[in-house]
Length: 241
Ligand code: DC
Image 1 (cartoon, protein in one colour):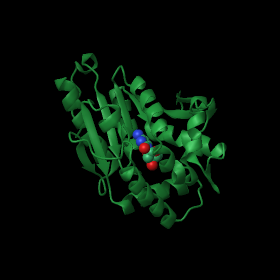
Image 2 (cartoon, helix red, strand yellow):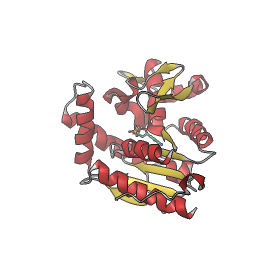
Image 3 (spheres, rainbow, N blue to C red):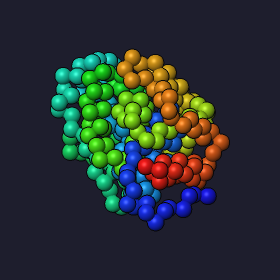
Image 4 (cartoon, rainbow, N blue to C red):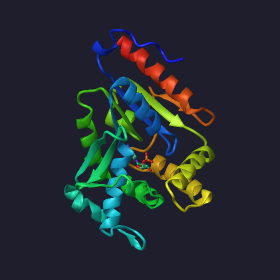
């Protein structure tokens, strides 16, 4: 059962919530729900790395025969990212240089190249700086890979989400099929494993659990239970702060 909100909740201080973990662990679903019920801003940092990847693909730096992600660095000042809240959907969509790219950044093709782009030091600097600015007022739920370790090492609540590769691939496969994608389960599982490897072994800000993060394995856990547990963690800290 979720905790009852204290009548003083809305007068209490706001906290920063960092949710990190492996790809397709359902971070964004839970983070979105949590932000909505706390009246916090939600930021999906994966969407930012995906949008930069799409830009690199559009400009021929990566994808197909192209394999020169480093050339992207010169053009970083030309990349303008913005989250625009969509009232009808109830969440923010990613805009790249003024264009809504929310659909394009979720394809398996972008997923295939995003880890390569996310390992470029200058890309990380640019995006981390933007993310820190978004969180200066607290009252934010941010999900990604390095939020509790690099972006907000002082976050009051840090969660590190894990699940078995098979469970994660099955979730992502279902999602892609629902969106009309034409992919095999094996290709999705391969992508999940490859991203785990690159994300955990890259030189700059590798994916790792912050020492003070709560490890949260949701392999066999439904959404409702996950949400209730997270909400409980958050309220406990907010009410003490
Ligand atoms: O959360 P996601 O699967 O949409 O993220 C896409 C990729 O972006 C992921 O493979 C790793 C990278 N990423 C990152 O390096 N740091 C973040 N804070 C968020 C995502």
